Length: 387
Image (cartoon, rainbow, N blue to C red; front, side):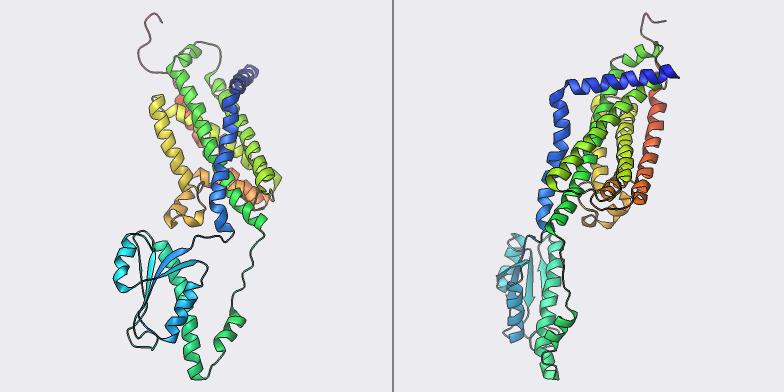
């Protein structure tokens, strides 16, 4: 048993020395996830500060009533809309050429309450999100102006302003530091996990390359146990993964202000679980891959898919409902929730421990499958000259 641990330790030390020997590659391994996370953070940073791109809206006013004039004025002054006046003949050309995302039509007789004359909205192909957003803004403006024109006739002058003052929603934004911490926190946690999966894939491909080169056949005749060699490889991958997590989250805290509000013990549990996941995924790639080229192509596809579905790229609320539901069966989603809970979300150790337990379970399953395939005696004819 002592010799088994010694072999595993020696293999791990050898792999760590090889990793350190290529210092340029090691430096890139630490800097690339930081650069990707910073890029994603800056992309989504403006949205968290209210600096949202305005929706290009075309406005067709066919009614000359005071109410329609008030609606048009309110829409033109809205900070989330870029309103452009159009005629009815320009609607199709502007929508098809994407000059505007949506067009709101205020028909003749709408301001006077003519029956059947309701505002209509059309949107360009692929602009359903902008149409829903613009429809909400337009509905608010129309109802406000309709109330101001109708209620005075019923003896309710000033009622609209009173209702707005009484029941209007007061928005209180978090401080810019908290908003930036949330945006950069998600991007750094997501990119850290994605790059750890790629790092595990590279370690697995190295193992696959050695097996194809006959290293495993020679090791089979040595006193060293195959499980000890595999354990040493997994241990080295875990150590590198832990160093990458520490470096990436350290940069997030020092440079981008991502706080660590949660439990430190929970963060350690999640970090260990994520490093186990990276190591087990690498061994799984090595065990199931027939050739290095095919294994690399399939592994890249799988990693990108589980990263997207797991929410590593985009926040969950931006994904379709079926993707969010599917994410619960992905280890990447649980790993992301655990890292976020232990850092900028400030959750307790219970939530982080639950996520870590799920990730540990996935890692154990992957490790069992990988060990079963890697320790299986190679089938086929023995090379000539070997009894």
